[in-house]
Structure formats: structure tokens, C-alpha cells
Image 1 (tube, rainbow, N blue to C red):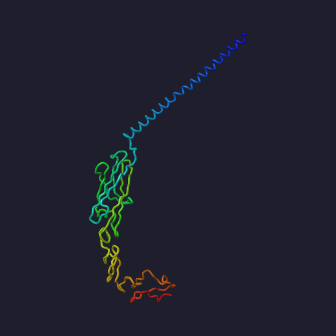
Image 2 (image 1 turned 60 degrees about the vertical axis):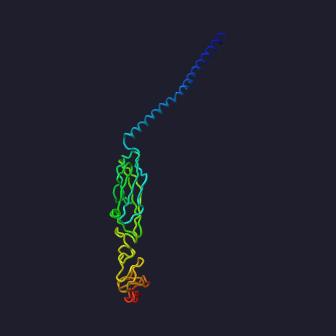
Image 3 (image 1 turned 180 degrees about the vertical axis):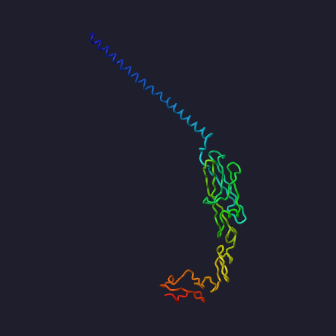
Amino acid sequence: MQYMFRTMTAALLLLSACGGDDDDELSGFSSTGDAPASTSAGTQQSEGSSEGLDTASSGGPSVGGPPEILGIVAMPAMISEGDIWSISVQATDPDGLDDIVGATLLSSDGGSAYGVLEQISGGTFSTSLSWSQIHAVVPIEFIGTEERVFLVEILDAAGGIASEMVSVTLSCDEGGACDGDCTPLDTDSNCGMCGVACELGADCVDGLCEGGFCGDGWIDPGENCDGTELGGFDCFSLGFMGGELACNRATCMFDVSMCF
């Protein structure tokens, strides 16, 4: 009996000891419920880092990026000799307008400069060009009309660049432009193209020289050749094996008598 009592007492003590361990484990599991507090502290630290970035962006180096062109207005869309062309550019910069240090108008390939755009107010930049100023940078010479394309570049202090193309149509009332001057292209001195002159006795008709005579040294319409001018032909190109091609001076037709 006494032995059984001692045995039961030992068992109760053992159960009590095991129950204490369970309580400790339960207590330890419960303490993990404090994890949100630890997470909250980590969140506060992250917020502090974010505030540090804000401070750097407002008082430190430029971090916002390059400038941006919001829009370009160019007037008029078409100009002729003696006209003025004006261009206005609206730009912005994520680091503030003071970060923009210049605006330039260039040729379409960026190789030639037409000049700088003046900052009028805020992010507005503007300039004007005359026909002669445009010609001075890239010569104006065309038949009919020409679309002249320009490159606008906005530069910021960090070297960031925003660029955009803009164009204007160059036009003359008749013919085209020769060396910057509007010129009719139906004259004997400029027949169809700048600098193409008709020979003596010929007239410019619809851009072509007509009415020349055989023996004037020019191959006129209806002639195969004229004097020593053979138009690049020889006996071989005319289907012969070889020989020497000549020109009949009376008819201005090929003389193949010496071809074989």
C-alpha cells in the first residue's frame, strides 16, 4: 500500500513537470504574437529611409531625369524667299526649370547649328529664322518645294537631352530655288534645273532645250550625235565587233562605215 502511494505520488510529480514544460512552450508560442511589433519597427525603419531619399532629392544632386519637350509650335507652315519662320518650344524638367541650361536648333542630322532658342518665360523657348539665315547654314536649292527638317534639343545641367524634329516647307511661286534665290526653271539659262543652259539656237520648252541645229556640237532631240559628241556610244554598243564609230556631220546620225 505504501509502495502504491509512493508510486502515485511520483507519477503526479512527473505529470506536473510535463505540464510545466507545456506551459513554457505555450508561453513561448504566445510570445511570437509579438512579431507584429518587430515588423512594425522594421516598417518604421523603412519609412525613415524613404524620408532620407526625399531629403536627397530636394537638397542633393539631380535625380529626377532628363528634360522633356511638351510641345512645339512653328509658324507659318510654308515660307518663301523674304519670309520669316518662327518656332516656340514648351519644355519641362523633373528637377525644376532652373535645371534647363540651353535649347538649340540644329540640322536634321545634328551636324549644323541654326542657333539657340531664347528662354522667354518659364519653360518656353523661342527663335525666328529668315529665308537667308536658313540658306546660310544649309543651301536652299530645289525644284518645286522642299521640306526642311530641323532638330530641337533641350539640355539640362546634368547633360540630359530631350530632342524632337520639326519642319517647314520651303516654296517658290514658280520653278524652284537656285543658290537660295527663287528662280524660274523655264529659261534658256536655267532650263528644267538650276544652271542647265540651252545651246545657241535652242529654246527651253517645258524644261527641255529644243530647236538646236546639227553641227552646233550639242546632241539635240532627234540627233544621234553631233560632231565628236557620240553620246557615249561606240561600235560595240551598237552591235558590232569593233571599229571606230563616227558621226555624219550633215545629218547628225551615226556613221558606222568603219565598224566591223
